[in-house]
Image (cartoon, rainbow, N blue to C red; front, side, top):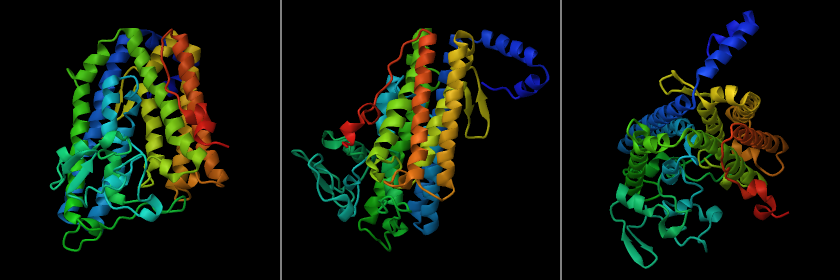
Length: 427
């Protein structure tokens, strides 16, 4: 954790500053760290839920009065909501209740033909792996799933929930941020060229309908957004005082509770973000493997994953109201329990933030979107993405070193993209 007065003290009296910092660190207990971690989860999921409610209001305004402006406002609300969710992902992997819930809100990639019309020239017309590849529930009031006929005459949250991972296929993503993203942007048909999805607002305009079935498209968007908000509210409540996730976490002994923190940070760093979300797309040079592929918002989502990991480790949590929630993070505990490993991990995580800031700045400048960065032959973009991946790998090794130094135990999720790249992209 960083205190605003530390720099001034160090500038005037280095020895006194070191003594003060050590005295403060010695007062930090594992119990204080784990209590702050739980409170941070409640705050961070609470901010994600609040942003979800704002997105729901923007979606309602779009459905009530479709226009260029209301569609742009709904897209902006989606982009604004993403960071507050992404910063919570460091609570995954170490908390079973979060893992069991996550697929409802952030599953990807998705076979979007399940939901709505697609450009079959680029998307295809059928899939051997997914019988619902082009089921298009918006266009079809009746669906056949296996031997069962599903009445989809009225699109409700219950219907949308029932379609999630239908027929046992993880590609049938019917709920969450990315289903909403697809409905707001439509397919990105630009490949690794410039530009994102460009769905017209008239796809929701029943008086001047494009794409067909505008009433059902609006109903699906309304239903899937309501589900997202309900899911976010559920997880925020689960981390509040008395909530199931908070109780489950705080019931652990100190070593297990601290191990859970570092399990989340290590697995998100390595197998999930460095591997599945980044290295796979870079190996294949495939824009379909970027996470926010319809909106070209991937650079922001990746950056805020990293920012969230730093918030959890440091105990310094930015809030949606502009304040910062301060408390003892595992960084402070490490300063006493394993000072060398702790200092190394702090430096590693700061280097990761810098690498992802460089990637984000490049995309924000308009010079190169993330899907362009991973394109074959784009040496500059490939290097930016690879540098960010390398920083995450170094950060993971730092987490493992801290775990060993503090005599904890974790298992970091792997990824074929990192561990066996020839298996996913044969040379």
